[in-house]
Length: 260
Figure 1 (cartoon, rainbow, N blue to C red):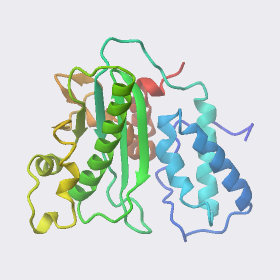
Figure 2 (figure 1 turned 120 degrees about the vertical axis):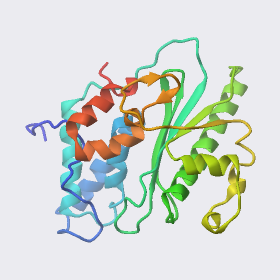
Figure 3 (figure 1 turned 45 degrees about the horizontal axis):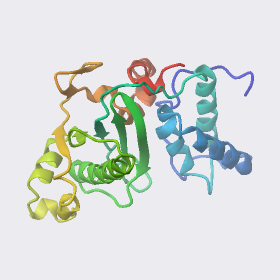
Figure 4 (figure 1 turned 60 degrees about the vertical axis):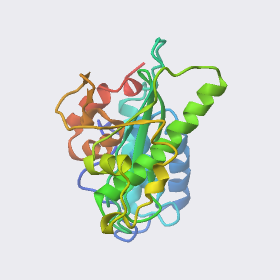
């Protein structure tokens, strides 16, 4: 890979990774070794979280298409090897989180992939990209589950800050782009549509969080308390495969993905 050509995005749009379509990988041990090493990168490279999540699902039986995807991630690393986390000293230490799942993205089991990122002021301090344990019956259910997981992470970080003696002057803010999910959190009614859900999941946390809707605005910055869904880290999974140019615009808008 030393002579490989760099590329500007970690995933290609024409490659749909499944567990059965393709020839077996020539060297499965090498595949596992490369992916295992990449998992350490995800701790400091949020722009790689979704791509590494995709290839990590096939460790038991990798195919050639999976191996090609891993090599593309290495080519992307060669393109932007100097990127890393940027932590700034600021007075504002309030917590804000963005949650957004990719509904039914897995073609093998149709489960959704939940993703979130948490900021303390302008600094990104926590992120995750993980498949949900059960299949969601609707996008609202997928959003609700992702919000519940993000809220739990927020409360854990809030408790750590409290133990360190760092005060929060206002409750953490949790943003999402599904109005129905925010309505369900505010008013957890039990009906036919909410049977698969557990509205009590938010009983203990909704009073400690400000759950706000995240409207879709074609903007690249934060303005008037409206955060564009295009600058969230979890939405990189869409543009990284569909539009490499847009992927670079999104990545440049996130301080954690800029070059040092």
